[in-house]
Image 1 (cartoon, rainbow, N blue to C red):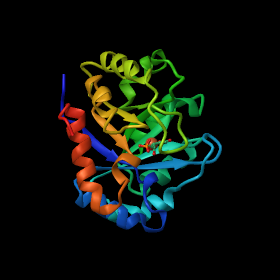
Image 2 (tube, helix red, strand yellow):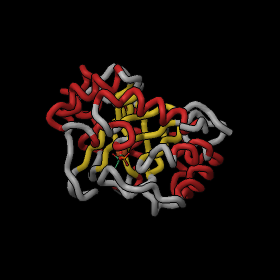
Image 3 (cartoon, rainbow, N blue to C red):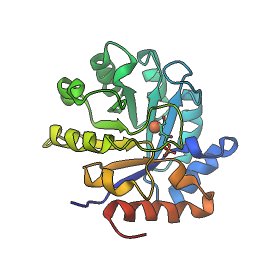
Image 4 (spheres, rainbow, N blue to C red):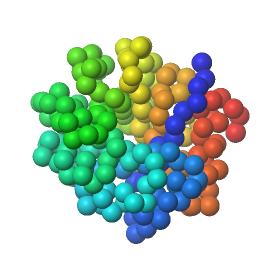
Amino acid sequence: MSHAVTICPSILAGDFAALGAECRALGEAGADWIHVDVMDGHFVPNITFGPQMCAALRPHVTGVMDVHLMIAPVDPYIDAFAKAGADVITAHLEAGPHVHRTLQAIRGAGCKAGLAINPGTGIEAVGHLLDDIDLLCVMTVNPGFGGQSLIPAMVEKVRALKALTAGRPIRIQVDGGVTLRTARSVAAAGADLLVAGSAVLQGGPAAYARNIAALRDAALGVLV
Ligand SMILES: O=C(CO)[C@@H](O)[C@H](O)COP(=O)(O)O
Ligand SMILES: [Fe+2]
């Protein structure tokens, strides 16, 4: 069944010399969330932003600042990202042995707690964590880079996780390879939040509103 989704543009696909302006342009284009991909060159083979960048961007984000931590360890940095103004902090299940403690620390810092799982991680791994998460981020690519193709097997994973979380106040987010061609399958499988970097930011600021609206329509099954 089709339902309205929230598009979360990832500034990883933006102009790094003008990220404040990118966040403002995305907000004006109708983005309710801004997804910030934090990478450490250790948990993933790429380096991006830290808490200082999040703090600098915060005044330019009108909606939800959604911080996706692809770092290990996570715990020493939670307070810094919370103080930087993150509304949601998502940590990876694979980032350390004490993810339950990490999720509690995120809530303790006043943020919504997100749990991300890599493509190779089975859904049984999240079963005992459901009381401690507000958002479940299903990685539909291997983390570290934008512009990759969605792994088709992840669509069934989204469907299974939707069933596993039924009746709970947990939002399912998909991250990686969301395009006009793939948005419908993940939305129909139960995703509520679609992260999209390349698909939203391609064409520059003049195209953002059109790209966001087209992705929302595609997720609903409207032909675009
Ligand atoms: O976390 C990640 C990648 O590790 C994502 O948030 C990407 O930034 C999404 O980019 P596209 O696949 O939409 O280009
Ligand atoms: Fe991400």
